[in-house]
Length: 301
Image 1 (cartoon, rainbow, N blue to C red):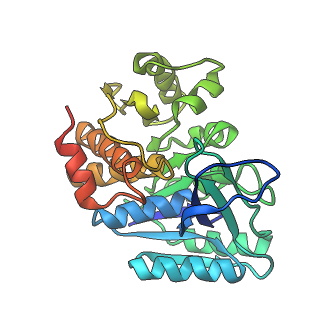
Image 2 (tube, rainbow, N blue to C red):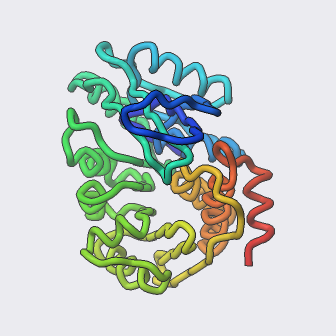
């Protein structure tokens, strides 16, 4: 089974505006509210592709209740821990302004709630997959990804880490099955600027040398790169299509890779599925469905 962890789920309030002016009342022309969070997005796309998963994490207050209700409507399997104080965050995303967003803080997560999460993780074993995605709230230890992987070490669990900076680097010592930095995050680790796909390859290889088995680098409109566990390099250009909504595209890549790999155990196929899923979500109002991914994959060269 695949398990995803989202420490700070959200209700994403995605709005379109005819124009935006500081200091003035700005009115939306289109809006929608959907459950968000990187792990939740991975679980949602896996569900759309016919792959089961369990979404773990913490929710609180009336917004937490709404997150659970909305996910239940989609048929997604969740096992969230309810935190007694505060409320799950609301993130405001200005769709027409190049990814501009305002993200909320979320509830305080106490030690007892963290122990409950470890209790759920204690059930994982051989051939399970644990996806750790996104940032960690300030109320939690900065090393919590590493600590969770250490807790499960030796059980045959495959780890997937989609995080930036120290969170990602701290996880490498436990040999994650897959990591997915984007080109900006990869460049920040090594203090370089990456543009062409070829420029990302040596740094992806360095992350493999540091412990990761497979390194998938998303580069937006520049395509993507995979250096797999054998050291083989795969590169694909971005499929052609109209960018509608970039929210969740990277998470969709993780889901597509897992779906492709679990079906065929072939890294080339998994990589194509990753790129197809990420692009299909970018071309959609919401997260990509199975038909969307298949249509994009069919048109890829």
